[in-house]
Image (tube, rainbow, N blue to C red; front, side, top):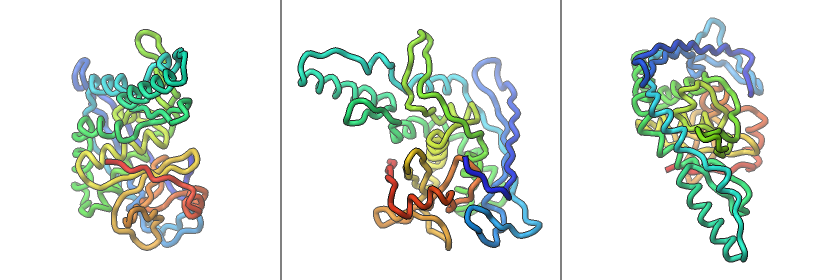
Length: 284
């Protein structure tokens, strides 16, 4: 986790039962780091105008427990799927092909070597946008009530919201009701991340993308570098923004694990980007 020492970011969570079983209303209060007046940057440290403050935003989001459970159980594959017997090379190829196809239906991508699995980002986000649309509208309404109008301002509100969730790394699997190990590639569905109020870099990136794309606010891609991932948003870049140029478009970099403004990422990751040591993951 990377932090700017001059920033204090708080999140207040108060959960009350909206109904006896089916849903909860959770209150969020967060500070938008993008609203500070920054004089200059000294490496990863922001020099802020004396007396400046961050805009505080708040909202109450309804989270349907059954939707959360459905999202969790739709994602991941049984570990038993990854072990099978075969007699010929042709049979092995066929079984690997079937596993790859079945895994993709549950949000998991199998690499060509057949021994590695990762998150199928497009699948996760496409499955999540509808269930997160009301939450996204609620966050947008909060920002608009506080005078946010431009696309960049609104994207900033969503960025700060996701950043305010606790950084924590999920396990690489979960156990289902039958005690079977379900492989999840160390990620969570966006609705689960919102419900639990924590996630790691890819879980937070998927929540951010699902929220903003559910209301068609901005196009998003993912930038994968070493063992880290951050988002890129397709907007007009401002001076000093950290940007990736991809397919003749500027993608402004967004770090979501911790409190960084739009267009700024930690120097150690930026160096990798400058050297071209990254992969762009397109999202539909």
